[in-house]
Image 1 (cartoon, rainbow, N blue to C red):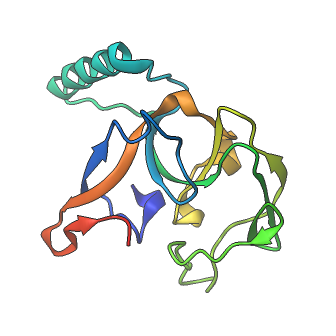
Image 2: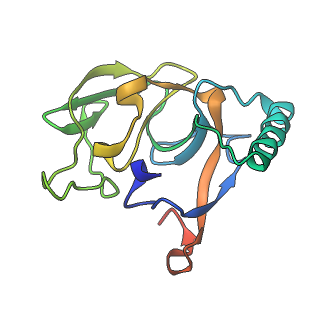
Amino acid sequence: MESMVETLEPGDKLIMSKLAYSFSEPKRGDIIIFLRDEPVNGIIGRASIYIGDISMKLRKEYRRNRLIKRVIGIPGDTIEIRDNVLYVNGEAQNEPYARIDPFENTVLNRDLGKTEVLPGELFVLGDNRGQSLDSRNFGKIDQSWVEGKAIFRVMPFNKFGSLYK
């Protein structure tokens, strides 16, 4: 979870809504959990993933393809990063959640040419851009990979509460 620092810290325990996108689509700003390159495939797929997760936990293993990122672009959006500034549909974005690197004193967005988000895709970034492997590296993600929406932090207790203000 280092890619989401300062919003989330490694070791934070979260509650995920697996039903959040049953009747709606992810929105810009949502924090999602997804399985990179692995479609969730409805209720049967979710059950299979859950059983697989339990089996892996018993072997002290974990999924290396489960990621948590923030949705930046939804279908129909054009994303561009120019001069270290994120633009969505040509508008510079105010990103109060994005971590300012203490050494560079800026958000480490890098540059990215114009990218159109097609139907069934999402463009995702970590909040800690200097330490995040995200759509800048592996491209847009398929919406079928989304497991759910991170909605609530239960631990640590001093940060207990909703992830959305």
